[in-house]
Image (tube, rainbow, N blue to C red; front, side, top):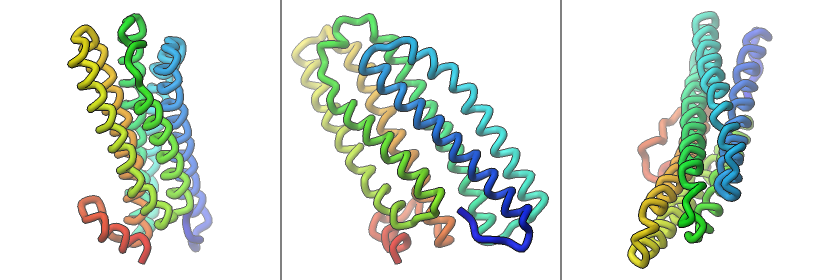
Length: 234
């Protein structure tokens, strides 16, 4: 993930914090996968597991941030090294928030699991967008590990597909609610779940943007898609 430095200990410090980030990312991926399987099967054991693992995520975030602060204090990094540490700090924040979205999905799953109407709504778009969100997050973390700006640009572009799945599901939910007012409560819970998945895609996109920031030194969070791709691919 990093270039070699004169200080081998500095390299070790950077590699260690990067490894911890990827371990945290792996746990978040598992959380999201569990949330989607819990939703598909109304598996409340998986819901409990997600709630328990959230505490681990919070601990990992605090631990990594503390380590980043210590590295900055000891090494006083500049340029790309400093950008990398800042990007790691922002990435773990996005990972923690993606984990929060998995917890929200789990909580709504527990709530609707006993509702007969929950099984009367076709949630194909939710399942598909969930798979897409897991994939894009995994690839964002892989691109971060390699600092691959080309992969980052592709990930950012693909977030549009998750947004489209969300919009399609909203249209479907409106039809369900108009046809049968008895499903309104469950439909709103499903809407909340779909929005949580969309937010996971947004967090993956943010991580991809941080890669471009580290490598190119350009903050692309609020630029046009065309300008972002020029920075990533140029």
